[in-house]
Structures are given as C-alpha cells and as structure tokens.
Length: 267
Image (cartoon, rainbow, N blue to C red):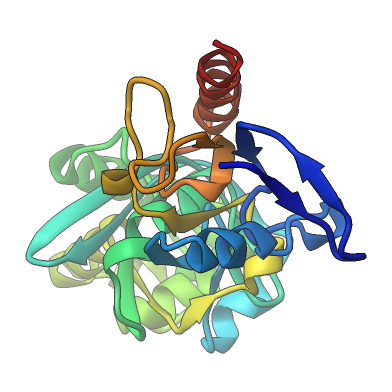
C-alpha cells in the first residue's frame, strides 16, 4: 500500500488505508456500494449484497386491507432448508405487506437462504397453547350466545382482523355462535396459531436497515481486520460480510470493527 488515487487524478501518499464506506441501504446517507467496487478492483471477493432487516412484500389483498393494524406480541415462523426460523414481537400490517420488529428480524434469516415466493406462519396468540386457546374460545362462545361469529372474538383479537381470519378458517362470518361446532372451533384454533401469508419478496434494498453481503470475511485477518491480500488495507463496518438482528448488534459491529481496524492501522 503506497497511497490513494483520487477521482481528479490527485494522489494521497500513505502506508495504510481503511475502507469503511458502508453497505447499500439508506443511500441518502452515502452508502452507495462504492466500497464494494473498490475492494473488488483490489482483488477481494464480494458476497452479493442483499437487503437485511427489511419489511416483506405480499400480493394478498386481505393483508393490505389491514394496513395500520398492529399486533403487539406474535410469533413468526418460516421454513428455510428444512429448519424453522422463528422470531417473536410486534407485527404491523402495511399497504405493501408486513413490517414490525418480528418481521424485520425474520427477514435477516431470509436474506441469505430464502427463495421467493415462500410462506410464513404467524401465531397470533403465542402465549396460549392450543388447548388453552380452545378453552378460551369456548368461553367466548358461551359469553356471546346469540351473536354472529364475527362479533364474538372482539376481546381476543383486533376486530378488523376477525373477518379475514374467519375466511381463512373456512367459517361464515354470519354464522351464529350457537351453531359453531367442535370442528369449527378446531379450525379457528389452527388458523389463529398458524395464520399463513404468502411472501413475494423484500422491499427495495435502499429501505433496509442494513444490507448483508460484502467483503468475504475469509479474506480479512480477524485479529486486525487487515486484508490478507494487500498489506496496509483495512476494513470496518457494513462493507464486511457481517450482519446481525436488531437490538443494537449492528451498531456494535460498526463500533467494534471501527475501533479494531483503526487501532491496528495506527500501529
């Protein structure tokens, strides 16, 4: 490493360079992916950048009709490579699909391994077992005798969610509670615990909280974050192929890698 050539052909002579140009999300902040190209030109392998921690798209009309409805504590599951990835937390229905912390976090698993379209499962009431939920539904039916099914679940779920939920369960909204059979209750339990949504993809990468992908970690010394290919070249932050879930972990990656690479380069 002997220096940096600028766009105007000027040269900054130096023995060490630290690339910390960010990923490809939030382009208005300057994260345009330029660093990937620089690293590639210097001989580094780039893992294809992808959106991570990002809302999900669906073409299902009922989801979009629920835009603005927020659920405080749900469990979201998706099958990836024969295994289930799972996250729990708040979910928000939007005009394009699904968002909220539980969805944002599950998207991190999808970023590396998923092929769209795919199906996610939502447990709307994860604090109830199926047996407990069955008992709760029977109690609701008993308390709301003479009412329609669509009006009997108001204390359990947001009212706006009830009609599409009943439709998913194959139940008539106008059916009276007194006419609900054991089989009807079983269908409702299964739908509440395993509400399916078909996902068609991610929102654009520019809307992602972070991007995954970047410089292959196999080509970086983990003790110093110096390039294994070019002596005096260091990396920090999102330009490296490292990412995590929400909760401050990605900020910690930025802080820690910035400190380590900076301290190493200064020696």
